[in-house]
Every structure is written in C-alpha cells, then in structure tokens.
Length: 91
Image (cartoon, rainbow, N blue to C red; front, side, top):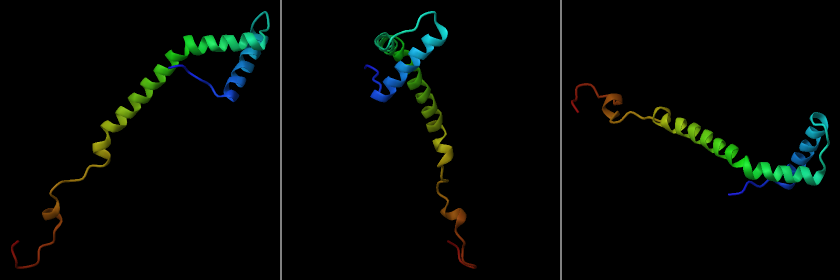
C-alpha cells in the first residue's frame, strides 16, 4: 500500500522541505529535488509512521471495547427486584 498525499498536502510538504533546506542547510533545494526527497520519505519512512499510527489506533479501540461492558451494562433478571407487589397477595 503506497501512501498518497492530496495535491494540496504534497504542495505544502514540498514547500516545507524547501524552507527547511533554506533555513537549516548550507545549500537550498529546488522544487523537483524536494519532490523527490518527499517521495523517498513517503516510500521509505512513511510505512513506519503509518504502521505506528494504526497500532496506536488499534490500542485505543481495544481499550474502549474492553470497557464496553461497563459502559452499557444492564442488570439481568431485575423484574422481581423492581416490581412493586400489591399488598396481601403473593406473586
């Protein structure tokens, strides 16, 4: 599964890479090179980030489902506990 960015997200990512190089590296990077670097990161490192995000979401979902019985629990066979018996009659 390849990680794809929307056109706008890709444009912003490339601009961010260009800015990073301007501000932190000795030489600036061009638009085409920044796009190539972005492709490399998406293919090489993107799956690690994606898999970690999936694992984190899975952990949260598991924790929530483990509490489901507490959140929506209903007492069973409660009719006789809650029923009001008429005076003088046995039920």
